[in-house]
Amino acid sequence: MSVTETLLYFVVIPLAAVLIISGLAAAGSGRRAKRYRPGRSYDFTPVWFLSAPEELADSHAPALPAGAQRAELTGGREIDKAAVASPAGTTGGASDRW
Amino acid sequence: MTAGEVAARERADHSETLRTQEEAERTIDELTGRREVLEGPFSTRQLLRLDEALRTADKSTGLTFSVYVGQLDEPVRGHAEEMLGQLPTPVSSVMIAVSPNQRVLEIVTGADARRRIPDRDAKLAALSMVAAFGGGDLAGGIISGLDQLASRAGRS
Image (cartoon, rainbow over all chains, first blue to last red):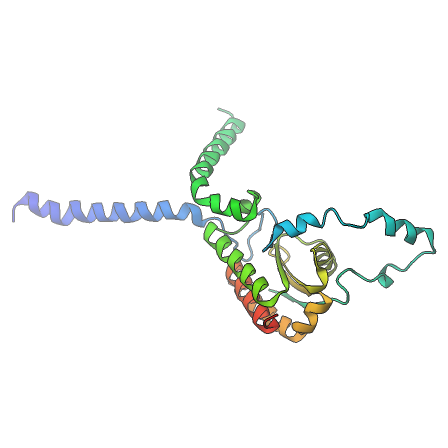
């Protein structure tokens, strides 16, 4: 084996392999930075998902004018805020922390 | 070059890379109609999986599932209930609100949805979601939680 061949096999090829792999790793990590890590500050834009967002858009224009019911309520005596039924009825569910 | 100019250059570079990603992300735009979701914590692939999970859950149960990820005002429970009230049919809706900064998860079910998903099962789903969030996997936790809630609610 000549000196050039030795250099090619043991220096040039390993170096090329290292460069290609590190290049690929660097290219892939740019996108990966965008994620949540527990304990670090989270400064992403809030997102709200619904499978059919167009339904939500419709709710901005209700059939009943929003002001109608409110005027009636404020005309009467003071109503305890908790006594007014929420649109969802008695809500249930669960809470947790991590 | 002043610091301001450097920052402006960096911002320009950033918008360049965003433009090259546009092709791949057009699907998301079509699905949501909004570009802001890309500023959120999820990658394009995670967004697609989330969308599919939401649609499957809605279609199989007949309930409306909704997921919010972001800051919640104090009291967090009250804020999550308010958001449920803003949905088209709050009575048969399930709101999953996640606040990574406050490390809080709230699952709120409307009156009808509560009959299909008892609070005990909602708590079970919350536990498994919180376990995933603690490991930093927001999308995975939400998807597995949706799956648990939807399978508990059963078919419509």
